[in-house]
Structures are given as C-alpha cells and as structure tokens.
Length: 177
Ligand SMILES: *[C@@H]1O[C@H](CO)[C@@H](O)[C@H](O)[C@H]1NC(C)=O
Image 1: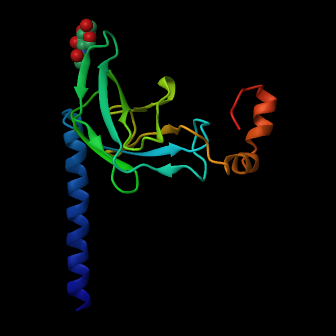
Image 2: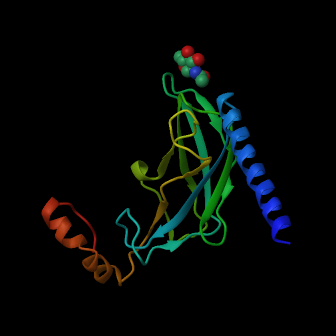
Image 3: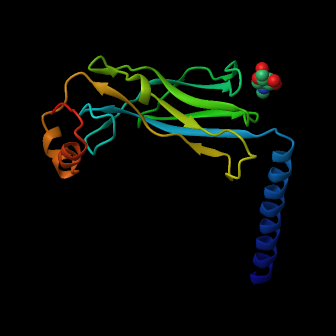
C-alpha cells in the first residue's frame, strides 16, 4: 500500500514537472495564453479609489485592447466581456504582446445610479508577454470603478478612518464629501 502510494506520488510529480517544462518551452515560441483577471466596482464615495463600502458590479462590460507601442495601431481587441456576480471578469488572450500596450477598459455599467467614468482612471494596464520576466500566465489588472452619481452618506466616516481628509488637507486636493 505504502509503496504503491509512493510510486503513484512519484509518477504524479514527474507529470507535473514535465508539463511545467513543456509550458516553459512553449513560451519561447511566442504562443502564450494569458488569463487576465480583474474586478469592477462602484465607487460609492466618488473618490476614484476603492473603499470598504465600494460595491462589486455584476453585469458590467469591459474590453481588452492592445496597441502597437510605436505606431498605436491596434494589435488585439477582445470581445466585450461581462463581469460575474462578484464583479470579477476573466479574459483569455492567446499570443504574445511584447511590443504592445495592453489595457482593460470599462465599456458600460448596468447600474444607472453608478455609471460615470473618468477618462484617466478607467483603464488598467496589463502586461501580456512571457518575455518580461513575469512568470505565470495569470495577469491581474487593477480594479476598475464606475463612479456613483451621489456619494453614500457613510462616506465621510469611512474616508475619515482611512485618513483621507488629512491626506487631502496635506496635498490640497479637492474632493466632495
Ligand atoms: C508596430 O509598428 C511598427 C512601425 O509601424 C512596425 O514596424 C512593427 O512591425 C509593428 N509591430 C507589430 C507587432 O505590429
């Protein structure tokens, strides 16, 4: 019994090990497959970052686009992808985009009370090449948020606890309370 177990364990280990080697070998021929994972939330405080009262948005639409870094021509466009119940999306990409800038962008929100986009933060950069030293084929994109039309009343409290108002005073930023 113990011996059979040891043998099958060894066999299993060899299988894993050789499939990893195989995957690595494939990377060299630029035929990578990437899984991009990210999350869409409702920015309930209109501060352009996540707080503990941000809410996941299910049914939000996002899209991944890559552009040639030198002439900006499109090199990859994913279909529109919709987030699942916890606001998470998964985009599968085949290929290597070493010479492209790739970004996930928001397309639309299913919530009429939370569908405002701000140009400079509605995109999340992802690196889709096996040649940059990042190992593994799962790439996490920064979370993307739609701004709620009207901030929740709890925001002041939550943001104060996060030290947001002190920070704002220090930096002299404007923000709505
Ligand atoms: C990107 O654009 C440059 C300049 O037009 C071109 O030489 C190069 O082949 C393009 N690369 C890709 C991956 O399309």
